[in-house]
Amino acid sequence: DVKVTQSSRYLVKRTGEKVFLECVQDMDHENMFWYRQDPGLGLRLIYFSYDVKMKEKGDIPEGYSVSREKKERFSLILESASTNQTSMYLCASSSDRRRGNQPQHFGDGTRLSIL
Amino acid sequence: AQSVAQPEDQVNVAEGNPLTVKCTYSVSGNPYLFWYVQYPNRGLQFLLKYITGDNLVKGSYGFEAEFNKSQTSFHLKKPSALVSDSALYFCAVRDERGSSNTGKLIFGQGTTLQVKP
Image (cartoon, rainbow over all chains, first blue to last red; front, side, top):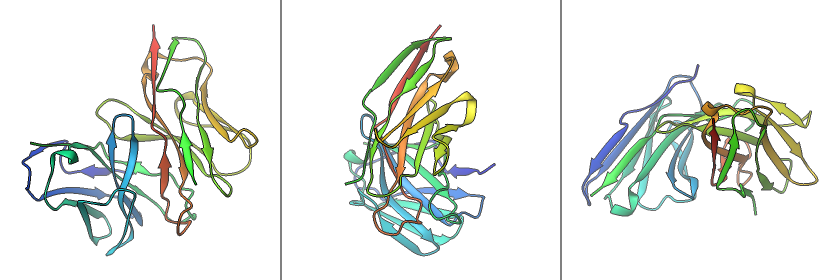
């Protein structure tokens, strides 16, 4: 079974702090994704990566950056945390081998509160 | 523009009754469609997908979904609901913007399924 592990289940930070969310997958997947989930809005893509050191902006990248130095690890960075970034953050990975028809596998999420 | 719509915020059914969670989509090409389930305080779990072929797709936990091209729908169904099926369900379609093989998905807003004993 694919395992996607997010380093923290719950995190509380202060406004203006630099925040790092870590995600590791163990299935050698090419693609990795960061979403935020808010009630009534579903999942919105922040950034994704299709290879080491490669990244592309999703639909809501403002205020975030990412890093993918190794294939198995994809980090989300909040450069200067703000209260409107309080949310559930979900990491996912998928294989690229069949041209986009493979499901994404999700971690259990990090519930981030910015005070 | 590509989109996915789940017209019901919540669906209530009695245990043992059939359930349907609705999803409609809008894409320019052939759709790749997915259903996921999310239990409280957990990530999303993959249930099933439609890529091509038979319009009735079978998935995990006894769920199935029916692809209807003319109605641009992909409704999730189960013949007999269980209390343990109570969860948040998401429909998703492959995002065709940019390169088609990045595996990006566009998600609906989710439907809460409540199964009562």
